[in-house]
Image (tube, rainbow, N blue to C red):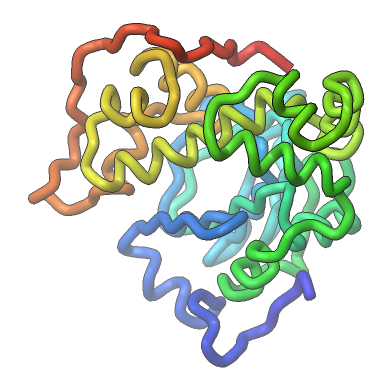
Length: 268
């Protein structure tokens, strides 16, 4: 079910969320991620995943590209919908990637813009994690295979299409029709996911950019602003909150372009 009541064994539910909100946390799972804590006033951005924003008390708010403020106890933002998140004291945010079974449920119930979703007020982490680990039953299996291949490493569109047994034009069409975004966006989302894991492991932003496939730290920062609305410096205190590990990001020297293709945030 999309709507989850309090369940035994759930890692996050409405009863214990407020007690845990004082310590921000960010966790990445298969097909999903969770952030719990305060929010910053982000810039306008577009995710490559569904975003579910749940207020721990009262209501939460999001602003769409037209400047309309949406308020509800829970809001859902489909992939590629431009929005901004105002400052909020305590909230819980799920990122649900489009290739998983939980995304099928969201596609079925959500409209094209920001959606009020009061039935998700008590959504538990286990609800998302279990369905996030299962592949979508709606997306074309060839598209799913292509998405998996893109997260595994660099590959050209021609080779990618050949690997899944269709033409590059057909593969682009599947991504446009079923995901609502080009595969270049999905590739960058995978790099950002890897970046978050590297930053949490202790790498500097420059090191994380290189390991994750970005041309340099500036390239990483541009894409993180475009797809998350924040910079690496802003997310570091959440990923590494202990003073012993340092709340301030190390700047690091810019890296050379190397063999990495320089995607542009404006690409669609």
